[in-house]
Length: 163
Image (cartoon, rainbow, N blue to C red; front, side, top):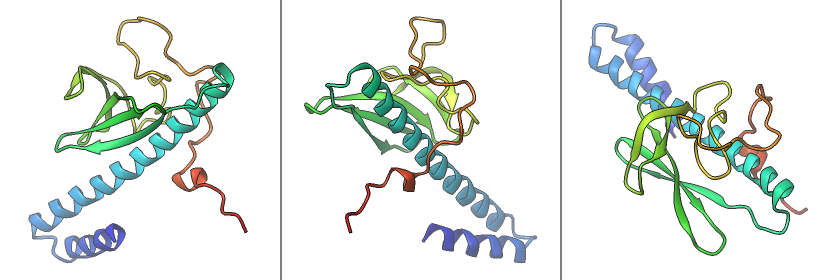
């Protein structure tokens, strides 16, 4: 549906080059679609990295899962534990794609720790949250290379269907 709407807005923006409102609406929608795709790509990579970390470090534990709660300015990424625990993993700025460490449940701390649009978007991420700005422990995933292959897409993480 959003791809259809984006194509329609693009045609309207190109057809009426004198109408700045149509061009702004198209740019806003294109940015939103790009953000959603980058967020899904980053979340799939985070899920795979967390699963691999738990398999190597804590093979007897079930790795946590993540969900996104969207707000007007920030998207809160929530870490869900098997026993029902919920914690804020990070916040993602919806206008820039910056990854922000949680200052608490309601909002982020100042200072970007990475970006979902970066080539190595998991650089500042670890199994327990995004990195501190000034040291404070090694929160990088074990065995993560500095230049990883492209992150898996959401379809790569879909469960296999039994035939």
